[in-house]
Length: 630
Image (cartoon, rainbow, N blue to C red; front, side, top):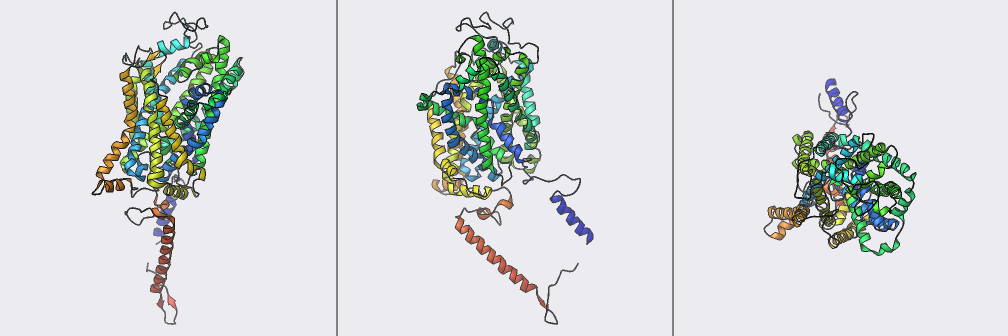
């Protein structure tokens, strides 16, 4: 008996992780795993949302759309679209503890939205790591006493190269020629691939190895890495900012960046750019937010997290603008031109304009190392989540114990496939394809996916049901402001972004190069490849659903799956409480309370009957409660 008691006690201690010398069991969801702590989730989400676009796109958009006046529509869009959508996706993933495919148990017909997210994340993951690998290349090339793009006396330079502005129509900078003629050795068109640039290919391999090693144990390993990758960019930004504002001409650059042009507030294009930048920079509809939140504990306050992460992301964009334009103001002052002549966006800012400005500083290799190291870390933070999104979707979809235990092999497989698909982007035509994917594969398709997600949750599953789910998870209902935004305001803004994107569409160009029609068709095909998943899967689900008529099959295909709801049995309360494999009927709250009251009364009656049955009258009129013999 003593041995039995000891074994029982030891077993309970092990379950609670209380045995000395044995690892403490902290995960709420032991089968799938959770973040080590909430800081890891917040830092990972910040690293995901804060990316290269914060450095090379926002400052350019700001000065192009009215400087300081652009901040007004930008923050309006943040409040009414950015934060609500961010909160919606975090709560969606956290409630079910599933990735971007599994969450669509909420309404199985819409699972194609999850596949669309996977397709988008695949495209972005392929070209994003190529950008990171180029940053790696520049980082390695900065390990020298003299930056190789400082002067024009190199084999790759042309007669037009000059470090001083002589004639803007003919002048090319040393950094631009280094970028075009040496790093990329760019071909004359998108169809002329040429040879693979071996140094870039090697850096691409390094990028994927780093990403794989950081994700080798899923969120358990990436959660530790983000303590560095998500915070150190701010250290670098601060160092560059302090250095930048001490330079001659820095103030003129910052003025150019912030000077309000209030008349532009009335321009619809400014509002469209603000909405688009908020939408794309927060990473909505990529599937990453749902995936990251799925590793949270069930009662985590994701409402608080969504506000912290969204505001941090936008604050970083504004801060990065000061860093960029202080240096560009110095460069413009040195060259004797207007700031607009040296300002650029995209790869042109990161690999041409800013590197050239750094050559004018004392100890330029040091500042170059810091700048490109910052770009690498910003890129890796986003890339971690993109890869984890794909891996989690595969693992959740298969769902066997073997695949969960061997998740590392899935991560390795996805990394190898991503590397192989990125090889064509390391050819001489790679930059053309990279920009094509950036402009088409991850543009209006994200808006469509996000809009359909809102419609599904708010109007198909039902906003009242979802509000109750959030209340059950957080302990309080979503604030009224967010309920209004989810139902009306955010879908309206998303629709506005889509219309704006279509109206403002212009065929992509790269400097003076005009893309041929056939390449634009490929671009549209990439964009449609993610959106087309939605109707194809919907038709498939309707076809295989039960029912004798189309309407019956349609109704059955949009009903929540029996497994929809919290992942752990301990959290499946109220309408999610089950006694067997039967499907859960979604009922009003009043009915749930009535049923719970009836169940409690039944339990009390049963207990009384048991007590009566177990009482045995004694010889002196007392009752004895028999105990089982040992």
